[in-house]
Image (cartoon, rainbow, N blue to C red; front, top):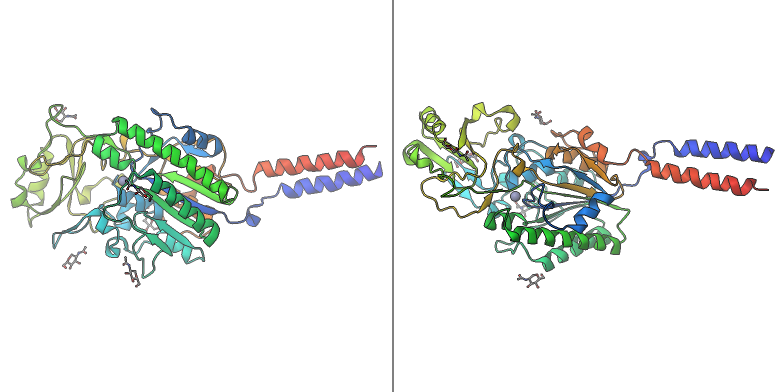
Length: 436
Ligand SMILES: *[C@@H]1O[C@H](CO)[C@@H](O)[C@H](O)[C@H]1NC(C)=O
Ligand SMILES: *[C@@H]1O[C@H](CO)[C@@H](O)[C@H](O)[C@H]1NC(C)=O
Ligand SMILES: *[C@@H]1O[C@H](CO)[C@@H](O)[C@H](O)[C@H]1NC(C)=O
Ligand SMILES: *[C@@H]1O[C@H](CO)[C@@H](O)[C@H](O)[C@H]1NC(C)=O
Ligand SMILES: *[C@@H]1O[C@H](CO)[C@@H](O)[C@H](O)[C@H]1NC(C)=O
Ligand SMILES: [Zn+2]
């Protein structure tokens, strides 16, 4: 009997000890951030996606994620990787531009122009490296630039003629990333795929080829999970799968009268700089003294909203930008801002108001630090940054996210499952020792 009591005390003490938070002692796990460009939040709902479905059981899902205003590739990806609003990081377009010199650099070339990306806000790669971690960017927008003189440890940039939908190459890229983690001890890798954006633009979100590419993505996620196992990374690697914006069908004749801005104002006479014919988001610099005239003319145009930069709604988090020209135009969902003629060929596009459901995007995550079978309410993509810092156990740079929004995706400190199994194990021991 005495023996039993002693054992009971020891066991109780041990159970209490394991009940304490284990977070301090938790080893740092690695992090893979994957972005599938233009993956609208509901793209998995009209097509069979067994691997994405399994992810929900094995990890967490957000109902959807809201990208920042400017639902465009570079601005949105840079908000995810910096946790800063677009007005702060100043990547205000996919194209680098200078409204004084009329310089315009195409998107792919802009990806390697540090002067476009490096505006005093440090992306996660650099902040992590400064705290001793090893990071890499595989085609992720912004990864190819230098920040305050620092480059990402390893950065691959897409070639100009890169084919977006090559499934063999997708798998090779996963194999490379897995070996970076397991053979070279990288802590953070960001991996980017140009689909389903490409198909969404070319064919529209309702085309059967969009469903096909979602199935290809789903197979790739299955491949990823196999690769994680083969590299023995199951209990060391957290994975976040997300995207930069959604996609909507472009409205065309005869369904609607397409917008031709030059009908409402003489662009040549009134504007000294413009980026139009680029989907639903347009920017324009009025000639000196012409701002009000431009604003009034565009206010009369249908199917769009015109803003003076100084009067942009605060919720856009754009007004503080120095780079944005004085006039910003946001088209109604599905309308393209044609300047003079309809030369525009896209069947699908984005760049519209981030409140539109068609602009919302996906969030999935799994790995040792994530809950299982957990569906979260929607949140803004800006909150992914503090989550990633928490996962990597680094001090975040100043940011606009809030960990309290995304922290609930993670196991509680230490994890109740570990505590429960410890208690179970000890009870069994107790039983064995005290059995007559
Ligand atoms: C645009 O170019 C002009 C002339 O080269 C330069 O003075 C100005 O700083 C540039 N603006 C931006 C925002 O880079
Ligand atoms: C980054 O800096 C390195 C070293 O100064 C330089 O060789 C490289 O060209 C820079 N890359 C970019 C994209 O600016
Ligand atoms: C797809 O990628 C594989 C592996 O990189 C390559 O061998 C093949 O030529 C590519 N196919 C196309 C159509 O580009
Ligand atoms: C576009 O604007 C016209 C003119 O104001 C309006 O009649 C029409 O309903 C609008 N179309 C859409 C799809 O909002
Ligand atoms: C975003 O974060 C930066 C850095 O902390 C801060 O200066 C800025 O005011 C924040 N923006 C908003 C809208 O809170
Ligand atoms: Zn994009």
